[in-house]
Length: 118
Image (spheres, helix red, strand yellow):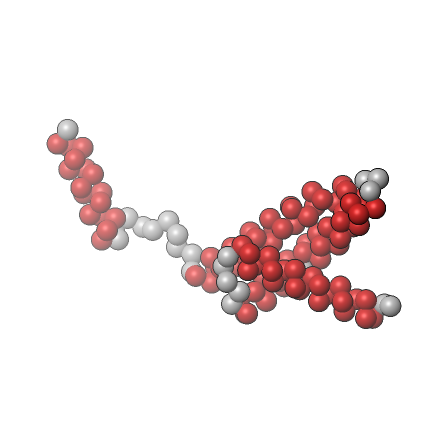
């Protein structure tokens, strides 16, 4: 019993002093990039599940499925560029902030495409 207690105390002291290497040796910029990429991948997964709605009998669901397909393609093609933009603009590392930024960028892209191809 005393041996376990001594080992636990030594382990706590060693970790507090930094003797045991930290598991998260990523720099803050790398953590930010991986967070943004993770969020983008989640959005891609979310919208790719909705693409099947294009085969629905409902016109509204078909339109939603088509929109989801466009978003999936946009996010997949521009994943790295979007991540770099979010790092440069210092987008908050909160899911709703990332989702809002991605929605805004998608809407900007669609608006630009409609302006070029009326």
